[in-house]
Image 1 (cartoon, rainbow, N blue to C red):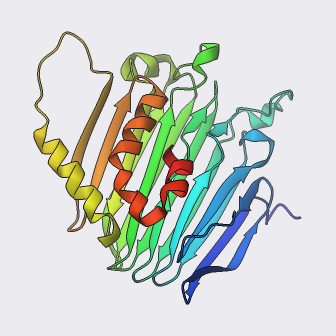
Image 2 (image 1 turned 120 degrees about the horizontal axis):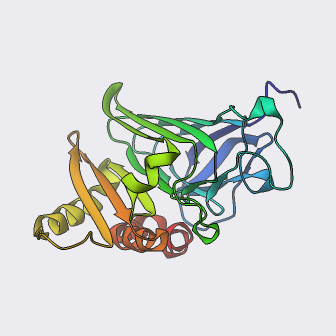
Length: 286
């Protein structure tokens, strides 16, 4: 394997009859792609895994995904995406100290297809620096569920918001027209904790297309029932909802604990069980 091909992945999924079949499923170190068997017609599941338990300073991962007409793809991770300044048990070379860990993903979803990107959250360790750049090209009648979330770090070791940098960009284009560009930049570890406390997890959820209209309607109705009261302290979990183009929504969530956010997401997205099936939904958000 050469350095030019390291960290590259490719997924091509098409519908043949009622079966979702991969024409390509390939990856190179430190990325690994695994697709377990599932009995759901028209749907495939892929786990994105990194060797060694995470990504380190200077690692670069690039993933290209094509979802064919009427095919459904669920992308999951196996545990949180851990970002280290250097590999546990090893010392970083001085030249690595300022290197950024980067993950680039490009997605294309054809007519009637759907992508459900539901990874576990990113957890950046002390002094780590991470860039995540994701672009989604959707046909006019394609569907997307995009979950992008980050934790404060290893709370059990007293690490809360002490990473060097977290930069995430999600750009969504529908029929070639950009409908969303969401950017989150967290840096300056000396002040992050005071700015982001008491919350330990922040999530952004982008929903778009015909397959998620039921979920959007339910969330819109629930949000309409919320009354905001002044209180002596912040709530344990906060969320907001705003429209995204003609057929979508953006949900933002902040919680005191990651599991609080996970439970909320599981309840908010329960309507996806109709599409994904109970078992796959449980793997993603159970």
